[in-house]
Image (cartoon, rainbow, N blue to C red; front, side, top):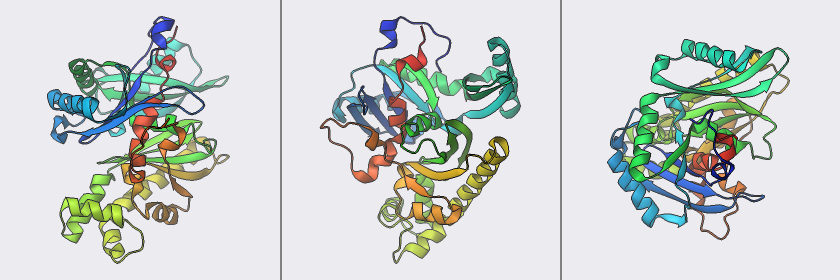
Length: 357
Protein backbone atom coordinates (compact mmCIF):
# COMPACT_ATOMS: atom_id res chain seq x y z
CA UNK A 1 0.00 0.00 0.00
CA UNK A 2 1.99 2.97 -1.31
CA UNK A 3 2.49 5.89 1.04
CA UNK A 4 4.99 8.64 1.66
CA UNK A 5 7.38 7.56 -1.10
CA UNK A 6 9.54 9.80 -3.24
CA UNK A 7 10.69 8.79 -6.71
CA UNK A 8 12.07 10.48 -9.81
CA UNK A 9 9.73 11.83 -12.46
CA UNK A 10 10.94 9.16 -14.91
CA UNK A 11 10.10 6.38 -12.47
CA UNK A 12 6.71 7.86 -11.67
CA UNK A 13 5.50 7.70 -15.24
CA UNK A 14 6.51 4.16 -16.10
CA UNK A 15 3.38 2.12 -16.94
CA UNK A 16 1.58 -0.28 -14.62
CA UNK A 17 -0.89 -3.13 -15.08
CA UNK A 18 -3.71 -4.54 -12.97
CA UNK A 19 -3.49 -8.02 -11.44
CA UNK A 20 -6.64 -9.47 -9.89
CA UNK A 21 -6.37 -12.76 -7.98
CA UNK A 22 -9.79 -14.27 -7.33
CA UNK A 23 -11.16 -17.59 -6.11
CA UNK A 24 -9.35 -19.94 -8.49
CA UNK A 25 -8.88 -17.37 -11.25
CA UNK A 26 -6.46 -14.60 -12.18
CA UNK A 27 -6.96 -11.64 -14.49
CA UNK A 28 -4.46 -9.12 -15.82
CA UNK A 29 -4.95 -5.96 -17.86
CA UNK A 30 -2.85 -3.05 -19.04
CA UNK A 31 -4.35 0.20 -20.29
CA UNK A 32 -2.66 3.10 -22.00
CA UNK A 33 -3.58 6.74 -22.35
CA UNK A 34 -6.19 8.39 -24.55
CA UNK A 35 -9.64 9.94 -24.35
CA UNK A 36 -10.70 6.36 -23.76
CA UNK A 37 -7.97 4.30 -22.07
CA UNK A 38 -6.37 2.26 -24.83
CA UNK A 39 -6.25 -1.49 -24.27
CA UNK A 40 -2.67 -2.77 -24.41
CA UNK A 41 -3.40 -6.34 -23.31
CA UNK A 42 -5.41 -8.56 -21.02
CA UNK A 43 -5.92 -12.20 -20.12
CA UNK A 44 -7.37 -14.63 -17.64
CA UNK A 45 -6.31 -17.98 -16.22
CA UNK A 46 -7.25 -20.56 -13.60
CA UNK A 47 -5.49 -22.15 -10.65
CA UNK A 48 -6.30 -24.54 -7.81
CA UNK A 49 -8.20 -22.42 -5.29
CA UNK A 50 -6.47 -24.25 -2.41
CA UNK A 51 -3.39 -22.14 -3.20
CA UNK A 52 -5.07 -19.35 -1.20
CA UNK A 53 -6.28 -19.82 2.36
CA UNK A 54 -8.22 -17.07 4.13
CA UNK A 55 -6.78 -14.50 1.72
CA UNK A 56 -3.16 -15.64 2.18
CA UNK A 57 -1.26 -17.11 -0.78
CA UNK A 58 -0.10 -20.35 0.86
CA UNK A 59 1.10 -22.07 -2.33
CA UNK A 60 2.82 -19.37 -4.41
CA UNK A 61 4.36 -21.97 -6.74
CA UNK A 62 0.93 -23.11 -7.97
CA UNK A 63 -0.14 -19.52 -8.55
CA UNK A 64 3.18 -18.79 -10.26
CA UNK A 65 2.66 -21.66 -12.73
CA UNK A 66 -0.81 -20.34 -13.59
CA UNK A 67 0.59 -16.84 -14.03
CA UNK A 68 3.40 -18.07 -16.30
CA UNK A 69 0.89 -20.00 -18.40
CA UNK A 70 -1.31 -16.91 -18.68
CA UNK A 71 1.53 -14.67 -19.80
CA UNK A 72 2.92 -17.22 -22.26
CA UNK A 73 -0.25 -18.59 -23.83
CA UNK A 74 -3.40 -16.72 -22.86
CA UNK A 75 -2.74 -13.03 -23.36
CA UNK A 76 -4.75 -10.96 -25.81
CA UNK A 77 -2.37 -8.20 -26.83
CA UNK A 78 0.58 -7.75 -24.47
CA UNK A 79 1.62 -6.72 -20.97
CA UNK A 80 4.64 -4.47 -21.42
CA UNK A 81 5.54 -3.76 -17.78
CA UNK A 82 6.36 -5.71 -14.64
CA UNK A 83 4.90 -3.09 -12.27
CA UNK A 84 1.67 -4.52 -10.88
CA UNK A 85 -1.33 -3.10 -9.04
CA UNK A 86 -2.80 -5.96 -6.98
CA UNK A 87 -6.32 -6.09 -5.62
CA UNK A 88 -7.09 -7.64 -2.24
CA UNK A 89 -10.65 -8.92 -1.64
CA UNK A 90 -12.51 -6.29 0.35
CA UNK A 91 -13.92 -8.91 2.71
CA UNK A 92 -10.32 -9.57 3.85
CA UNK A 93 -9.84 -5.92 4.75
CA UNK A 94 -11.18 -3.46 7.29
CA UNK A 95 -12.37 -0.25 5.66
CA UNK A 96 -14.06 2.74 7.16
CA UNK A 97 -15.06 6.27 6.18
CA UNK A 98 -14.71 8.72 9.05
CA UNK A 99 -15.09 12.41 9.74
CA UNK A 100 -12.49 13.85 12.11
CA UNK A 101 -11.78 17.31 13.48
CA UNK A 102 -9.31 19.40 11.49
CA UNK A 103 -5.76 18.67 12.63
CA UNK A 104 -2.14 18.50 11.53
CA UNK A 105 -0.99 15.54 9.33
CA UNK A 106 0.94 13.79 12.14
CA UNK A 107 -2.04 14.14 14.47
CA UNK A 108 -4.37 12.89 11.73
CA UNK A 109 -2.37 9.69 11.25
CA UNK A 110 -2.60 8.90 14.95
CA UNK A 111 -6.33 9.73 15.02
CA UNK A 112 -6.96 7.35 12.12
CA UNK A 113 -5.04 4.60 13.89
CA UNK A 114 -7.11 5.06 17.05
CA UNK A 115 -10.37 4.97 15.05
CA UNK A 116 -9.41 1.83 13.12
CA UNK A 117 -8.27 0.14 16.33
CA UNK A 118 -11.85 0.34 17.64
CA UNK A 119 -13.32 -1.48 14.65
CA UNK A 120 -10.83 -4.25 13.86
CA UNK A 121 -10.54 -7.61 15.64
CA UNK A 122 -6.79 -7.70 15.01
CA UNK A 123 -4.13 -5.61 16.76
CA UNK A 124 -2.72 -2.80 14.65
CA UNK A 125 0.69 -4.49 14.81
CA UNK A 126 -0.77 -7.23 12.58
CA UNK A 127 -2.17 -4.80 10.01
CA UNK A 128 -0.93 -2.52 7.27
CA UNK A 129 -2.92 0.70 7.46
CA UNK A 130 -3.37 3.40 4.83
CA UNK A 131 -5.83 6.22 4.32
CA UNK A 132 -6.82 8.98 1.92
CA UNK A 133 -8.28 12.41 2.67
CA UNK A 134 -11.48 12.79 0.64
CA UNK A 135 -12.49 16.30 1.70
CA UNK A 136 -11.51 19.13 4.02
CA UNK A 137 -13.63 21.82 5.64
CA UNK A 138 -12.70 24.58 8.08
CA UNK A 139 -13.19 22.34 11.10
CA UNK A 140 -13.46 18.75 9.76
CA UNK A 141 -11.58 16.25 7.58
CA UNK A 142 -13.29 13.37 5.74
CA UNK A 143 -11.01 10.32 5.60
CA UNK A 144 -11.33 6.85 4.11
CA UNK A 145 -9.06 4.29 5.77
CA UNK A 146 -8.27 0.67 4.92
CA UNK A 147 -6.37 -1.90 6.97
CA UNK A 148 -5.25 -5.28 5.61
CA UNK A 149 -3.62 -8.13 7.57
CA UNK A 150 0.13 -8.15 7.12
CA UNK A 151 0.27 -11.88 6.37
CA UNK A 152 -1.95 -11.33 3.30
CA UNK A 153 0.11 -8.43 1.95
CA UNK A 154 3.39 -10.22 2.70
CA UNK A 155 2.23 -13.32 0.81
CA UNK A 156 1.46 -11.19 -2.26
CA UNK A 157 4.93 -9.63 -2.03
CA UNK A 158 6.50 -13.10 -1.83
CA UNK A 159 4.50 -14.24 -4.85
CA UNK A 160 5.52 -11.11 -6.79
CA UNK A 161 9.20 -11.83 -6.19
CA UNK A 162 8.72 -15.41 -7.34
CA UNK A 163 7.31 -14.32 -10.71
CA UNK A 164 9.56 -11.27 -11.10
CA UNK A 165 6.91 -8.57 -10.67
CA UNK A 166 7.17 -5.30 -8.79
CA UNK A 167 4.07 -4.65 -6.63
CA UNK A 168 3.65 -0.87 -6.58
CA UNK A 169 0.19 -0.80 -5.00
CA UNK A 170 -2.16 -3.15 -3.19
CA UNK A 171 -5.71 -1.94 -2.86
CA UNK A 172 -9.10 -3.41 -2.03
CA UNK A 173 -11.43 -4.61 -4.76
CA UNK A 174 -13.91 -1.95 -3.64
CA UNK A 175 -11.34 0.80 -4.23
CA UNK A 176 -10.83 -0.52 -7.76
CA UNK A 177 -14.61 -0.58 -8.30
CA UNK A 178 -14.91 3.01 -7.12
CA UNK A 179 -12.17 4.15 -9.53
CA UNK A 180 -13.91 2.37 -12.40
CA UNK A 181 -17.30 3.89 -11.55
CA UNK A 182 -15.75 7.37 -11.37
CA UNK A 183 -15.65 7.27 -15.20
CA UNK A 184 -19.37 6.51 -15.50
CA UNK A 185 -21.64 9.14 -17.09
CA UNK A 186 -23.88 9.00 -13.99
CA UNK A 187 -21.05 9.18 -11.46
CA UNK A 188 -22.54 12.34 -9.89
CA UNK A 189 -25.53 10.41 -8.55
CA UNK A 190 -25.41 8.79 -5.12
CA UNK A 191 -25.05 5.12 -6.01
CA UNK A 192 -25.03 1.68 -4.43
CA UNK A 193 -22.32 -0.43 -6.05
CA UNK A 194 -22.36 -4.23 -5.72
CA UNK A 195 -19.28 -6.15 -6.82
CA UNK A 196 -20.23 -9.83 -7.07
CA UNK A 197 -17.25 -12.08 -6.39
CA UNK A 198 -17.22 -15.88 -6.20
CA UNK A 199 -17.72 -16.22 -2.45
CA UNK A 200 -19.05 -12.82 -1.40
CA UNK A 201 -20.34 -9.51 -2.65
CA UNK A 202 -18.73 -6.22 -1.74
CA UNK A 203 -21.22 -3.39 -1.37
CA UNK A 204 -20.49 0.31 -1.13
CA UNK A 205 -22.27 3.63 -1.38
CA UNK A 206 -20.49 6.02 -3.71
CA UNK A 207 -20.98 9.75 -3.89
CA UNK A 208 -17.86 11.52 -5.16
CA UNK A 209 -15.93 8.93 -3.12
CA UNK A 210 -16.57 5.57 -1.47
CA UNK A 211 -18.47 6.53 1.70
CA UNK A 212 -19.96 3.34 3.16
CA UNK A 213 -18.76 -0.26 2.70
CA UNK A 214 -19.98 -3.73 3.58
CA UNK A 215 -19.66 -7.39 2.58
CA UNK A 216 -22.29 -10.13 2.23
CA UNK A 217 -21.65 -13.87 1.59
CA UNK A 218 -23.60 -13.70 -1.67
CA UNK A 219 -21.16 -14.47 -4.47
CA UNK A 220 -21.57 -16.28 -7.76
CA UNK A 221 -20.30 -19.61 -6.42
CA UNK A 222 -22.71 -19.31 -3.48
CA UNK A 223 -25.60 -18.98 -5.97
CA UNK A 224 -24.32 -21.97 -7.95
CA UNK A 225 -24.05 -24.20 -4.86
CA UNK A 226 -27.53 -23.22 -3.70
CA UNK A 227 -28.99 -24.14 -7.09
CA UNK A 228 -27.07 -27.45 -7.09
CA UNK A 229 -28.31 -28.36 -3.58
CA UNK A 230 -31.93 -27.40 -4.17
CA UNK A 231 -32.28 -28.84 -7.68
CA UNK A 232 -30.21 -31.95 -7.01
CA UNK A 233 -27.76 -31.36 -9.87
CA UNK A 234 -23.97 -31.13 -10.15
CA UNK A 235 -22.10 -27.86 -9.76
CA UNK A 236 -21.39 -27.76 -13.50
CA UNK A 237 -25.08 -28.27 -14.30
CA UNK A 238 -26.04 -25.65 -11.71
CA UNK A 239 -23.62 -23.15 -13.26
CA UNK A 240 -25.20 -23.72 -16.67
CA UNK A 241 -28.71 -23.27 -15.23
CA UNK A 242 -27.67 -20.07 -13.47
CA UNK A 243 -26.15 -18.56 -16.62
CA UNK A 244 -28.86 -19.74 -19.02
CA UNK A 245 -32.00 -19.14 -16.95
CA UNK A 246 -31.10 -17.22 -13.80
CA UNK A 247 -34.10 -15.44 -12.32
CA UNK A 248 -35.72 -14.69 -15.67
CA UNK A 249 -39.09 -16.16 -16.63
CA UNK A 250 -38.77 -19.87 -17.42
CA UNK A 251 -40.06 -23.27 -16.29
CA UNK A 252 -37.20 -23.40 -13.81
CA UNK A 253 -37.78 -19.93 -12.38
CA UNK A 254 -39.71 -21.00 -9.23
CA UNK A 255 -37.04 -23.55 -8.30
CA UNK A 256 -34.16 -21.15 -8.93
CA UNK A 257 -35.81 -18.33 -6.98
CA UNK A 258 -36.49 -20.69 -4.09
CA UNK A 259 -32.84 -21.79 -4.13
CA UNK A 260 -31.14 -18.40 -4.06
CA UNK A 261 -33.77 -16.11 -2.54
CA UNK A 262 -32.48 -16.55 1.06
CA UNK A 263 -29.07 -15.25 -0.03
CA UNK A 264 -30.58 -12.39 -2.05
CA UNK A 265 -32.81 -11.48 0.90
CA UNK A 266 -29.72 -11.16 3.09
CA UNK A 267 -28.05 -9.02 0.44
CA UNK A 268 -31.04 -6.68 0.14
CA UNK A 269 -31.27 -6.40 3.93
CA UNK A 270 -27.63 -5.30 4.11
CA UNK A 271 -28.14 -2.76 1.33
CA UNK A 272 -31.13 -1.23 3.14
CA UNK A 273 -29.08 -1.02 6.34
CA UNK A 274 -26.25 0.74 4.50
CA UNK A 275 -28.66 3.19 2.85
CA UNK A 276 -30.13 4.07 6.26
CA UNK A 277 -26.64 4.63 7.64
CA UNK A 278 -25.74 6.80 4.65
CA UNK A 279 -28.85 8.94 5.15
CA UNK A 280 -28.22 9.30 8.89
CA UNK A 281 -24.54 10.15 8.38
CA UNK A 282 -24.65 12.29 5.24
CA UNK A 283 -28.25 13.49 5.09
CA UNK A 284 -30.86 13.14 2.32
CA UNK A 285 -29.86 16.02 0.04
CA UNK A 286 -28.29 13.46 -2.32
CA UNK A 287 -30.60 10.44 -2.16
CA UNK A 288 -29.60 7.05 -3.54
CA UNK A 289 -30.59 7.20 -7.21
CA UNK A 290 -29.29 3.96 -8.70
CA UNK A 291 -27.72 0.58 -8.02
CA UNK A 292 -24.86 -0.62 -10.22
CA UNK A 293 -23.80 -4.28 -10.36
CA UNK A 294 -20.25 -5.37 -11.18
CA UNK A 295 -18.41 -8.69 -11.22
CA UNK A 296 -19.02 -12.13 -12.65
CA UNK A 297 -22.22 -12.78 -10.69
CA UNK A 298 -23.83 -9.64 -12.10
CA UNK A 299 -24.56 -11.33 -15.44
CA UNK A 300 -27.22 -13.69 -14.06
CA UNK A 301 -30.39 -13.21 -16.15
CA UNK A 302 -33.23 -11.51 -14.29
CA UNK A 303 -31.06 -10.37 -11.36
CA UNK A 304 -31.35 -6.64 -12.09
CA UNK A 305 -35.16 -6.89 -12.35
CA UNK A 306 -35.31 -8.81 -9.07
CA UNK A 307 -33.15 -6.26 -7.25
CA UNK A 308 -35.20 -3.37 -8.67
CA UNK A 309 -38.43 -4.94 -7.41
CA UNK A 310 -36.98 -5.60 -3.96
CA UNK A 311 -35.19 -2.28 -3.38
CA UNK A 312 -37.28 0.12 -5.48
CA UNK A 313 -34.10 1.55 -6.94
CA UNK A 314 -33.18 1.48 -10.66
CA UNK A 315 -30.62 -1.32 -11.14
CA UNK A 316 -28.22 -1.87 -14.02
CA UNK A 317 -25.21 -4.01 -14.82
CA UNK A 318 -21.97 -2.15 -15.49
CA UNK A 319 -19.91 -3.16 -18.51
CA UNK A 320 -16.28 -2.15 -17.84
CA UNK A 321 -15.35 -2.57 -21.49
CA UNK A 322 -17.42 0.40 -22.59
CA UNK A 323 -14.84 2.80 -21.11
CA UNK A 324 -11.96 1.06 -22.95
CA UNK A 325 -10.68 1.58 -26.50
CA UNK A 326 -10.09 -2.04 -27.57
CA UNK A 327 -7.90 -0.91 -30.51
CA UNK A 328 -8.81 -3.92 -32.66
CA UNK A 329 -8.07 -6.47 -29.94
CA UNK A 330 -10.60 -9.25 -29.52
CA UNK A 331 -12.85 -8.74 -26.49
CA UNK A 332 -14.17 -11.53 -24.26
CA UNK A 333 -17.66 -12.93 -24.78
CA UNK A 334 -20.38 -10.46 -23.74
CA UNK A 335 -21.59 -12.50 -20.71
CA UNK A 336 -18.01 -12.41 -19.36
CA UNK A 337 -17.65 -8.62 -19.53
CA UNK A 338 -18.70 -7.84 -15.91
CA UNK A 339 -16.10 -10.19 -14.42
CA UNK A 340 -13.32 -7.86 -15.64
CA UNK A 341 -14.58 -4.94 -13.54
CA UNK A 342 -12.01 -5.22 -10.74
CA UNK A 343 -8.97 -5.64 -12.98
CA UNK A 344 -10.15 -2.77 -15.19
CA UNK A 345 -10.44 -0.54 -12.13
CA UNK A 346 -6.93 -1.41 -10.93
CA UNK A 347 -5.56 -0.92 -14.47
CA UNK A 348 -6.78 2.69 -14.34
CA UNK A 349 -4.28 3.53 -11.58
CA UNK A 350 -1.91 6.29 -12.63
CA UNK A 351 1.64 5.99 -11.25
CA UNK A 352 1.29 9.58 -10.02
CA UNK A 353 -1.47 8.35 -7.67
CA UNK A 354 1.10 6.18 -5.91
CA UNK A 355 4.38 8.06 -6.12
CA UNK A 356 4.67 11.78 -5.50
CA UNK A 357 7.56 14.11 -6.18
